[in-house]
Image 1 (cartoon, rainbow, N blue to C red):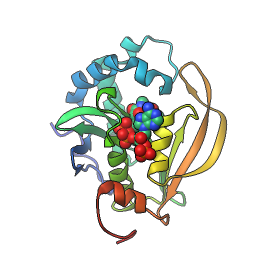
Image 2: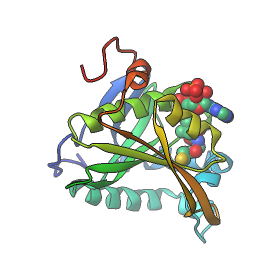
Image 3: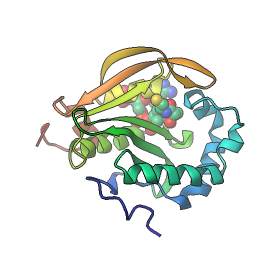
Length: 210
Ligand SMILES: CC(C)(COP(=O)(O)OP(=O)(O)OC[C@H]1O[C@@H](n2cnc3c(N)ncnc32)[C@H](O)[C@@H]1OP(=O)(O)O)[C@@H](O)C(=O)NCCC(=O)NCCS
């Protein structure tokens, strides 16, 4: 069954691919892979995840995943998010979500992402975010993309800086993450910004805006 047939928003649903990475809409039948990766990656992911009273295993059951996909689908069908599965070499490997999409005068959104530790550090998420940035400033029609990152999260900071995101803000006690209110650095790109680093990540020999 196509989970996304009802959506009628620009640029969604969509599949994007480059090199070994494919981004496609998250779907209910990813549940077993999602649960397996979440359970295997608890120590890797938990410092960056929202605080919650239930144990990691309870929160990351396939039943909770299916509920999450239902909620994301409703929001995607309202044009409020683009929830991608990150697939590496044909295998489910993580998530990349364009969330809090706001239209009108703002035309902005926030990025959130994670990848299985066993395939991390090979440039896959940089490539995935680069694809999503081009898609959001292109067919989706957004103007601003933001990523809020904990100062302690060296890989995530390196990722956004590597793609040319600008540090714009320092938010004190901003999000309730891993059991406490955590400061975050606000990184952003707007559609006018030089995207040479994005283009380089995509391996395309073209100029910004071409
Ligand atoms: C953040 C994350 C998605 C990056 O995914 P990835 O596929 O490993 O990213 P890439 O391989 O494209 O590397 C991105 C940058 O991080 C750097 N990096 C990778 N591992 C690193 C580490 N342990 N310490 C410091 N920098 C690191 C890479 O060198 C690269 O920087 P560069 O472009 O300057 O070389 C991954 O680390 C992750 O899933 N972490 C846990 C969840 C998380 O933090 N989500 C984001 C919350 S804001």
